[in-house]
Amino acid sequence: MKLVLTCEHGGNKIPKPYPSYFDNSATILNSHRGYDLGALDLFNYLKSLANFSEYSETSRLLIELNRSLHHKNLFSEVSKSLSENEKEEIISRYYLEYRDEVETVIKKYLKTSKKVVHLSVHSFTPILNTKTRDCDIGLLYDSRNASEKGFSKHLKKEILKIDNTLNVRYNYPYLGKADGFTTYLRKQFPKNYLGVELEVNQKFSINNKINENLKAVLFSAIKKSIS
Image (tube, rainbow, N blue to C red; front, side, top):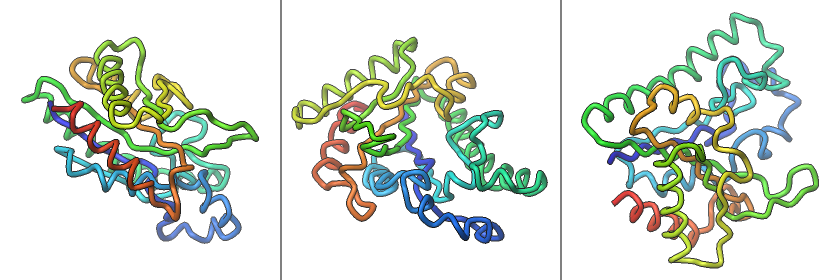
């Protein structure tokens, strides 16, 4: 088994020559809409477990790496105003470069390994549209995929062995089969690819750092799950 670790929303950077488009967007760039708070910190803590790891610090407000090219929210309300040539350049340089590298590595691993587990590290805002989200850790997978379901159950079991006070939920606060990078990769690799999104509540993030105890719990649980 090979472990691939990714983080699509690790930062809120707007690369040149696009910062001027975001001059009036500092508030949303620094919010959960601009990036996944604490996700890159958790990714860095876990990456020694992985055979391959990749992350992006380009803000999802420039281009959403966790959406398909046809998705209506590929570009945000800010970047939608860019010219078609600029959009094509962003897709080529930031979207395809990132996703193609991950896809190429998975393809290579599947030639020699029985399974590839892809953990995509994310975080979610604890309150959305005034509604509190009742979850500490979300494990998102395709419920129709027996291997993904089995791995997620095992991971949850290992997490709760270490800390049974954590509220771990399946396919919450989003559905694992919704449009996303793992959903796309399942179609490319229908056999022996397991794509699971790890969602951590941002209430555990302070100054863009995830709680040390929670990181240790996840590290140990993932290590045991892939052994």
